[in-house]
Image 1: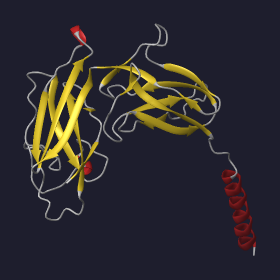
Image 2 (image 1 turned 45 degrees about the vertical axis):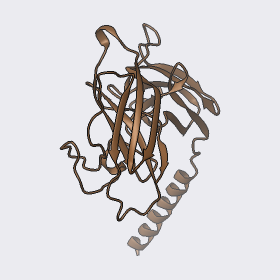
Image 3 (image 1 turned 90 degrees about the vertical axis):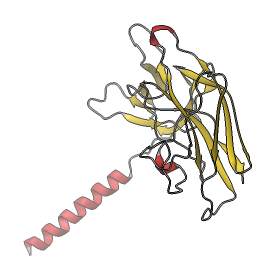
Length: 247
């Protein structure tokens, strides 16, 4: 009998605890913007680059990860309060800008209602112009780059590749690209559709071309494409805007 009452008591406690948890308010303030250089958003790979938000004074709470979308934008809901924003070391094809001698590259801000804030960074390169077209069963791309960071901190370009995907999320990661069963450039990520890296002798005139993969089982009459630029010593690629091509 005591066991029965104990079970009923514990069930009531858990039920009340569950109700209390459910009654916590959810964050309501939208914090959004883009990662930019001179006001121009910087394109990256999907779910590859993030920054972190910390709330000073909250002890050992874990940081809040904010992922940057392929077009350079970000968005999330958060509680109002004081925050500090910092990029994860090595994340992004850029260098975070120093805010002050004391704060270094950490950005301090207050969130009080919906807030839009662009985050200014210094990229190693920017895409000045890009053009991607389709003709005769081939996808052709041209890219012009401008080197922003020069001198002792400059980095060269490792390779430039053209990527295709049946969905709009185009990346150098295999799961985002067309799988036609072939391996290109002896890379493990066999879904990367690229016959060879672009000629880097002139970064103001990089041209790439790739045949469309075997479309026998391809169920769409379009394909998405973008160019990715791999900078030496930088994990995350810089990308051109994604283009939808009608087959």
